[in-house]
Image (tube, helix red, strand yellow):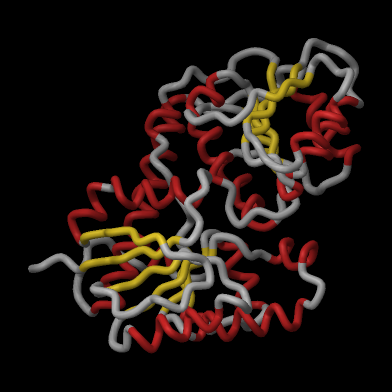
Length: 343
């Protein structure tokens, strides 16, 4: 049987979680056995979609009012094609903190989502929020947790003994809550604990000013190799203000690192896999949890558990996507889909 052709549309190729997920799709032997995947970069807000030679078109595009006409063109130009949208960005906390007119914003999402045969949420929390706000029907939603290849991370030596270096990995942006992290860390007594940031972004000057005078805090710049950054730290702190899923947490858990998360949006699910849910975004809570790391009471998962988690994550991701394509195209495309349906 001829393999179906899946075309993925991308309007932002900035290094980060989305591109790493797409690389995982590109490199997955299991997904390649059941479909041919290709990737097409488009200009944000473009109207020039035209007819796309594909059985399924998967949008990884940024949704907004300005880009809505382009989605109508995409739908009209590809009548008979199956269209899927993956929502990498928007969450309950994002809307609460960033959207001045939430009713208008929700209306845009409802219109956009209605143009697709299926919408993929990248975490259970995001999917539940979509249903709770009536952004689409349950039959139009699939939950497929984001994933990357975690194999190399499982080969790092796990943490043993007291934590010495806390890592913060990601774009230096308001979203990540790194300003709160610095304030909480600076409230700790000097016990030899260090805080290292790996990433670049618009907030770097402000964060450096906030950390000024504290020799325990360092800014290491962008880490082209995530493995290198992870190998330099004993724990990972993720005080994000909004986060659709949080791939860094999965990488850190696979590497046997201790992981602290704020618990917002998709980060709440990371505690099911072994992360510590700090339970909010207060300086006091983060200072307390950071201080507890220095006592050495927590350790990373053993190698056997890390390998099992890595395999399970890969299987769930591949089964989710293969099952979705099978359902859309009406034939067996490998892997079941029941486990990836919205709960």
